[in-house]
Length: 143
Image (cartoon, rainbow, N blue to C red; front, side, top):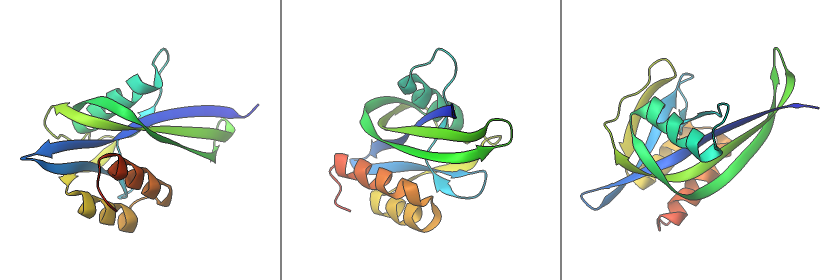
């Protein structure tokens, strides 16, 4: 039975002076991504997403709706082959000031939607492109 790991996170957005902004993090490897992390015992996947966003970026959000799930396999030193699932949600920023959790990530910032998409496509993980594209569609942004 392969080891299964569940992570959750989100594409966080806010409207600042009626301008839509998308939150992107720079992960510890220097890649553009979204705040996410591993599910802890007793948490729902939604609780995991919101906790990780809060811990990594200092923003408290609320889930608008699920975006999608990315599934892949990777090799783990202890567990061997791991089936990994990452659940992404569209999350509206409610409160908090951006503050990167430096133990986990290098930085966090807000971007205009098309700039966010450009950054994701050029400096992010390929399997996250469609997550951001879908999130922007849900927010009414033409890609």
